[in-house]
Length: 307
Image (tube, rainbow, N blue to C red; front, side):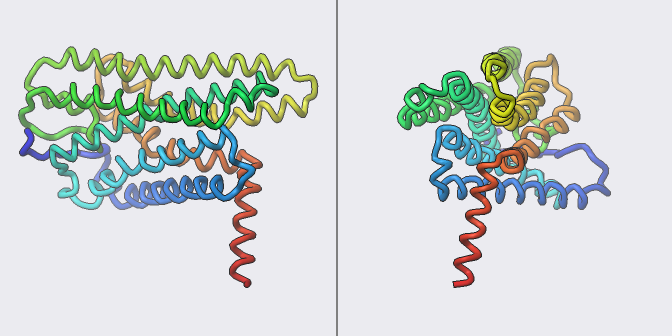
């Protein structure tokens, strides 16, 4: 199969919807890249945002920008012309590795971010010492290394199998479940590894996040003033919104028995296309500090232009 091309059939839709879908996904992709770049710029420029929470947010924005780039441009190519559906075998390997590397890193990062919020709200006086710059760097590095190892195992096990035609997959990018359907050998071991390596790991991270937020809610209820409770609760709402949109579709695809191509493709749109867009939207529209920083950057640019 190394000399073959894999044909991604794309999302199931009527041919008449090619142009409308192309326009919609192109706008979403541009907004995703620009929005996450803007968050990276604002956090870098504004010294008030040089805190652990925003340090992890820069990692999340960087991941989301590339996570979307791994899959969406290929999807757009399938909508432009039938010839854009083909992808070389080696490019397919790279896409699958990159997708699971960034996706699993984001999964681990959400867990770290929930732990950060737990310390900030439950232990405010010890927070600065517990989440030092060195600790933040170690936690962030561990998420990237864990994601890399997780993806390497998944990619190696997927492409060690012998493959034979047809080389068409009912998806818009190279993912393990549709690729395994092209194998000429028994894939039961690989399917079990997918269940454990992806589904159980994601479920474990999700349960740790839930545990963190149960502890956070208990701490919030102990705050005496309603203003303090509202402020503490607001800092977590943004994170919870993005977490639910990311983990919900992922757990649906990798933890349920069997694979339904049409359903998987549509559900995958939520965490490959929409969730990376939610990051800049949620963290800017619901975050007063980021909005203030954006206004500062805007006022500085206007002042510079007038000079």
